[in-house]
Image (cartoon, rainbow, N blue to C red; front, top):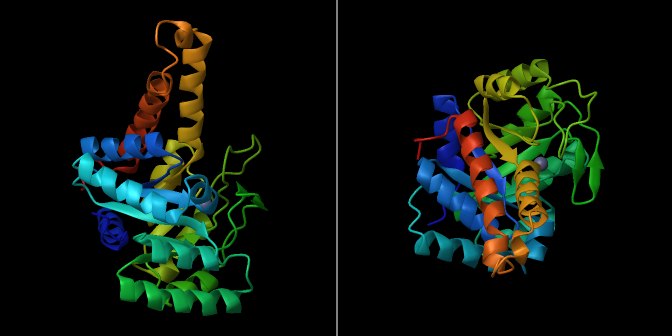
Length: 287
Ligand SMILES: [Zn+2]
């Protein structure tokens, strides 16, 4: 069964650990993440970008696949199915498709319009028992073709959005999607501490979890981050493992070309990455 991310994140905030959001791209990805969450007895959030939703033949296909997989694999840990960086229209498509959580990325709207649209979605999500993530301050890097510079959020604006009744808040603190450049300045803990103080018990979300050093991750969790998004890292480990299989010529041996065999090392690599992140985030055994 899919659940909203509300309870798992409130527990994480109180217990000073974070729940990982791992983005999915296909069946292999979903299966690898669900099985690892179950094995680690950890709550988990499956992230779906609008691009990935389109790739997987629409949000309804995704919802049904995830629901059936939870049933078939006997997954009992809490699983939230979450729209990542949703547009206003995308949010409504996911609500209709049966997602249990959405992110409305209104960070590119003027604050007044972000507030208006967020307010409306707070109401709809409350009626449906869904969780809602809002974003203040653009997160750097590229996401579905949109390039941001990695701003630091204004703590006052964060409070304004948090007070609308969203479930969790993504605040830009110098974090970037994708690989971090060599001259990256690190996370702004000053901003994070200021935001944390303003929003109180509201769980904070850290996007761009790939490549942030472990000590910075731990410090961010201690300052109120309860959800960390990981996407690129699973892609990199998947690609490296499949590349190795092919470079070693294993696809040319016997039935090594069978897609189930060809993709198996990639699946194992995703599992290892997810396991490692759950240990770092402290969510192991918290289901
Ligand atoms: Zn993001």
